[in-house]
Image 1: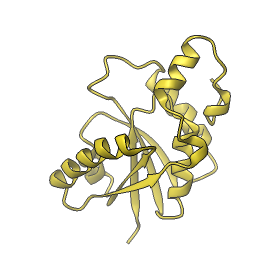
Image 2 (image 1 turned 90 degrees about the vertical axis):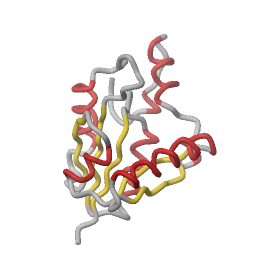
Image 3 (image 1 turned 90 degrees about the horizontal axis):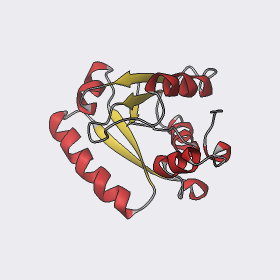
Image 4 (image 1 turned 135 degrees about the vertical axis):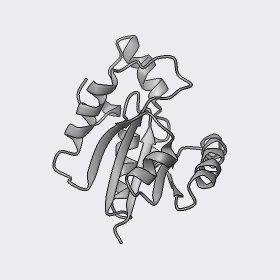
Length: 151
């Protein structure tokens, strides 16, 4: 059976830390679907979602095992639609773990066939977050070292 994983997130923006998680996931799964979703707790996006999809797709243009989609539904429902058995989540610290563990439990409740796999962030990316990247970019700082595409 093909092992399909979804890497869900708002990815506003998609960072080199996210890219690292995807590349490491390819050693574990046959297909990785990057699901760029609308986060209902955020009022608006800093980067246009369609532009972000195109940027992320360009990063993986030569890697057919990686797909990029947009979604606006429960992640557990998305996983069922794509016959994904796994969710990938990156953890930078214990705060991330507490948050992600709660979500993982709910996803498992909603979809018994869905297993969450946590990958610890590589040390060189542990300090990177989309929030920090947005703030640096907003004030004209150079973020090119922290994202795997040009903006």
